[in-house]
Length: 506
Image (cartoon, rainbow, N blue to C red; front, top):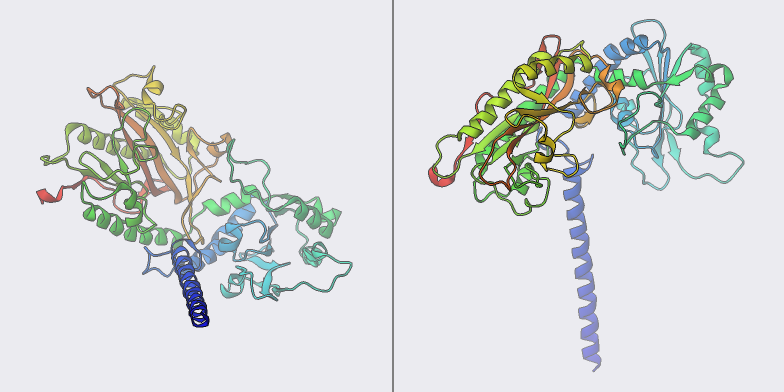
């Protein structure tokens, strides 16, 4: 009896230790996988493994400080730019473009070619508990700041009459008085807000920060505070030479990746849901397919759950402007409707490439391409046919239009790169097309404006099956640059449609 109890106890203890170790191992494995794919500390540049992103981004940061900052501060009549960053308000601009997720950045125009750069205030350093991974050391490592205040150790002190609010901007008044700026920009927005129903707006410092800042500065300098919205927008939308070079280097890797994905597709076998993974997480691969009315033609609705790539599909990497047609069994070339679809895409792209120019406003560009599209028999519409209720019911929204003419909706918004770790969409600047608030139509495109040639067009293509959409859909989202002479592509534009065969035909 005692032996049996002893053995049961030993076995239970062994089982507990074994399962605990397995759980720990699995937890570490899962954490590693998530970090490697999504985290900032893992491998965010798996596709760009031959590019030293930290080095490139620091060069971009330097050129932005040296070239862009003096220009945009003087254009907006700003003598001092105070940018408040705090961990509690996540701010990629502060963390990556400027170099710290906490602290008070102060940029001062003192009259020469160099804008003085300082990082002051409550910038977090080491933690008493050894946790809290503050992203604050870049300001010390990049070598671009003239004045760097000492980082603050995070450690709860013995209680007393003072709180964190008493320290947040301590000493800033003396710093400002010594420079005596006439106009001070602070990171909050007022006039150029996001579109109605936008749910992810980042508006800047908190009201508490603003009140504490004005109290520290005193009434004389508090009355000189203005929103930094136009200054910050100009800083973001102006590209620098190293940024253009980096975007083109990144595109080279993206093109190789897309071609590899195209070459590995096996019609009838390759799952549509797997294509994004094959794009290495940095290239978005999608499939266009004629569907019945009410379903998405690009995989964003029911009906795609178990879909595999099949003959008749268009496989696309829209952000790279790369497209392939999957030949049906027995086909040696695309059918007439696909040839017409491809020809329409090339025609539209050619019109936009000659119309979108740096120095023009979106309003001027829209007026010009609308006229050219009308001459080409293409109708410009405000809404995207697939996006309004009832979604993907194109016959409802094409009623009243000429059923023989292609319809197009355009939304050519900006893109961010700068010294950021990744490219990201930018709606805080010029936006070409029918979407976005009116102010975004009046901002001239800066030289080498980084944006997307994004549009959706719907080419009439009647079939005998009346349950199917009677249009063929196309989506382009190619990242490009706008120059004074028109669009400059990051890679040579594709002229011929790639063809993907069933393996049995190879």
